[in-house]
Length: 253
Image 1 (cartoon, helix red, strand yellow):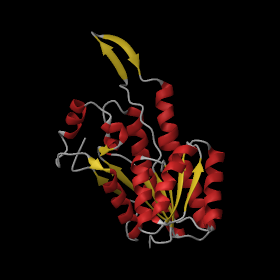
Image 2 (image 1 turned 30 degrees about the vertical axis):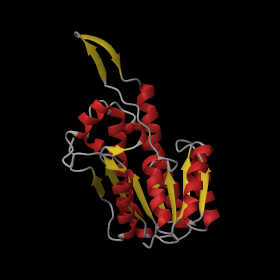
Image 3 (image 1 turned 120 degrees about the vertical axis):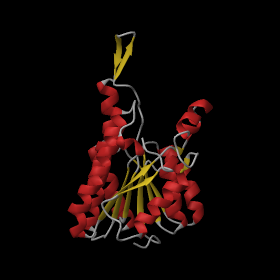
Image 4 (image 1 turned 90 degrees about the vertical axis):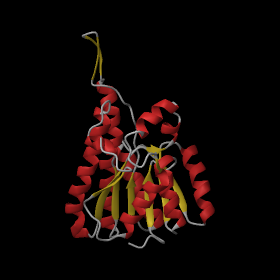
């Protein structure tokens, strides 16, 4: 797919990896639709992106709310007259061990609320956005691309029962969608970032960061721009479909 003049939707696009991907699209001449929770964050991000000279629109929506997602995707398709790319990036982290035990005594358990909040955003939100983007691509006869942002944690990371389950799920959804949507000319894929420099990571204690970086063969955190480059590759390469692209510096959990 040619990126220039394509309409690219990025969920969680106001900051971090989402913003970096939106910025890459803008620099390559795509029209950008940002979806995020807070209008003020969206407008701040959009103002920067508009400096590139491309059309940027903001849509405040909760990706876990079905009606909001339906409306946002329909509005994007109608406002731009097209919907060519979805980057399913919105996500949260609420880590916790399954059980907390001290001196043989059970001290606590991973709560259902903590489990469900991550599943709602990171898995159900991806499902809803993917479904509605695909529906509008079919409606507009767009040979589009859907990219789900997974994670190296999809292999299973201690303290991340909820997050790992969700990120494994979004990779599997990409495989299913690649098979189901191919008849409409729609591709689906996933990207699995490793430990990437974002506000959350850079706010950690230096010693914590050092422990995270230690097992990474390249010896550093990834940059959000490197995840964005992976997204541009998938969009531009019409033969990439149904696969997960690992961008993790060689890390294996």
